[in-house]
Amino acid sequence: MMKAYGMIVHGLKAIMIEVESSISRGIPHCNVIGYGNTIVKEAILRVRSAIESSGLNYPMSRITINLAPADIPKRGSQLELGMAISLLVASGQLFDGELENTCFVGELSLDGKLNPCKGVLAILLEAKNKNFKNVIIPNANIHEAELIEGLNIYAFGKLSEVVDFINKKKKVEKLQAKSKFASSDRFSKDFRDIKGQETAKRAILIAVAGGHPILMVGSPGVGKSMLAERVPGIMPPLERDEIIESSLIHSISREMTDGKFTDTPPFRRPSVNISVPSLLGSGYPPTPGEITLAHRGVLFLEEINEMNRIAVDSLRVPLDRKCVCLNKRGEGFVYPADFLLISCANPCKCGYLYSRKKECTCTPGEISAYKARLSGPISDRIDIHIFINEPDFDELTVSDGMGSAEMRRKVLKVRKLQSKRYAREDFKLNSSIFDNKIAKYCSFDSDGEAFIKNAYKTLKLTPRSMVKIRKISRTIADLDESKEIKLKHISEAIQFRQRW
Image 1 (cartoon, rainbow, N blue to C red):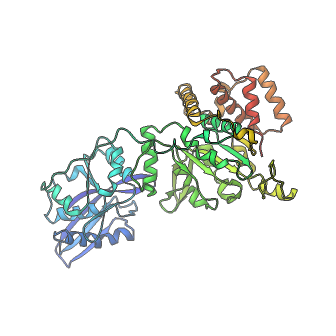
Image 2: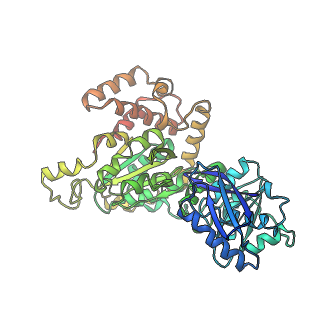
Image 3: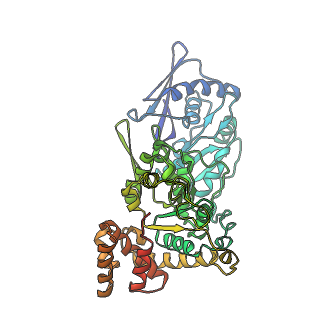
């Protein structure tokens, strides 16, 4: 009995699988045991064809392939290379000197080529955790190896090349990890290109600096989408561990098509018709949905009140807990979902309720019904609300508006301040301050407390709104380089809590 090692992907994690092959006398037949699904059981047909197409001998005997541990369901095609290697060692065609330190990953085609498979980055990380010395992957997944240090990773295009390498008939250089990553094209769109929306830019600056969800309400054409598209350009670049985390998610979702890693935060813009499974995650094991793909980046919901209300309401837990909890076939999955929500909406069905240029044609009933499509609990969880109108002509000619470079500099400065302030806490941003820490980090002086008390009564604020105002005030004070939260900071924060 000979053993090789492979990996399968389950959720966002990889699991090590022992591939054991036993060859005995009897009628030629192959049994694959160990809780494999149809794809895994059919794999032996591809393995046989690949072995024969590579000029090797497929054992004409009774073959048993065991995939251990047996209680874990095996899905996908990542184990096919490991199955082929195990068979070749068992039949004496392959040297087994380094097999116990090597993990084999890859799907086989009928002609012996190694095809790409999803989740290779997760597999490499788990191989490192399991102290494997070597990992063999398909050439098509070579870019995922650029993130991993401390492993000997080799890439091949054919099964025959792997066999020659193991039998020491071919020398191959191990892949090298990258130390630097590109910044993509996130700086190509500048906030300076948007004229006459300085208040909206200010709101977005506060949102990004403190990690506050934001809702922009305005007529069609005022620039809501343009503002949202420029947000990644002012966000801090991802750290190496964040790049790995984000890339792992996209690798499992087969979203890494160009093979390029970037320190630019993800920007996801799902369709207005998106379903709940597509937003949260679907299948078994669940493929990450849009909110997980937006992890460490931006989730932009365009026309949020036109979306499926159930889908929008499903954001409640992710906005509060920074994760999404899924239950599939009695098994629980927890996926990360720490994103900045940028949303926008028209104020009414026709879109021109507050327009300076065009008259609204909606009835009061239609306006109320349209507003009601965004539920109160979701609206209350969005920290910043801002109304955007068409700019006057004079505003369009102003050339000294706030640009991305200035905004990015301020964001980085405030984020650095928060990182230092919350170094010993389990949260990093003002928007995530725990309720029991509000008094410590967001306290007002006597004038501020009197002011917020009056606002609570006059504006009929909810307790959650009061907490949001304190957090936003903290961010505004940080932008103002003020240790104390002053009356002007509270006043501006309340301005951005005027719910639609």
